Image (cartoon, rainbow, N blue to C red):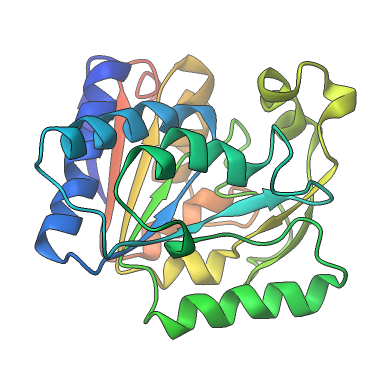
Length: 241
């Protein structure tokens, strides 16, 4: 792992945006895996600023989001589709049809998971996967478990994960109990991975991910086995290292 510590959230977002933009500048046909927690929103603002300044062209880029809430129509105000569309896709020159994520209202779960995996495979796989990390060490919506999920699947969300999403919904009773998530195996097949974290509440998860043994109880710990991982964190998130 390439671990970089910056002073604050603003610097973290700026550096992360430069890393993603560099991938796209190097390969204009890049396939980018997007994340949709609150931490990454500043990164998307940074990418929009780079686009508006004429530094990066998104016209041939494809995006695949890590997750979507189960049962939410994509036009629901708090769907992951709406979040990424409003904060990134609508603000750059990428065709909307190049933005992909699981369908939260698909009639059958397994066929939808299989469809999404095939769609990723058809592009040749993810070139750069952007990740946040949950307070319990989850990545995507891959919760602590007894195994590492190999492919996209339907997840029962933990209470800590649902609590972390209250800011989007207003009350925990409104937060869905399940979500589609790209599996650990799919994440690990990405060519490059960029994980970002900020704040003291992420310090324990960062320590467990970097310094402890690999275990599905800390899903992010599997990243120790990936050859091209950059961990970009602020001083607060690095406080337990």
